[in-house]
Length: 188
Image (cartoon, rainbow, N blue to C red):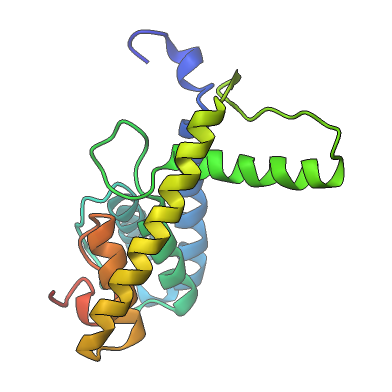
């Protein structure tokens, strides 16, 4: 924004995806959970703050999202994995990696349907190098392996699956709260 101007700021694939994820998550949770709040304004403010806190990995809470419906909690857990944008000190997988991974999947599906087609993955109007795509794929495979190993280890404590799963997600992604025993009113 400072160096390239407002036009380039809004041409960023990552920024558009990030804002879209926040807006969609806030709206979906709002319509699913608004009945739990005294007023519509309180519901929107609390839900928007919670979504922002989870996706930016700041870990603050103003509402006990452990009490929200399952649909809303699943969205919260998904936000834990997505995390912040590239270049941010926030945790999570990062929005840019998610975009590259999804575009890579679409490319592979299209290539399977049309094997002679040569497709390039683009981000912000530029081709993404093969090494970058490969790096994202290796990161995701390593991430999944570490997550699975940690989940197996923590399951030895005999806590419920949701507590174990979100405790790993919260610590691996540097989120703060998880769900159930490690929720916003719980403790690690």
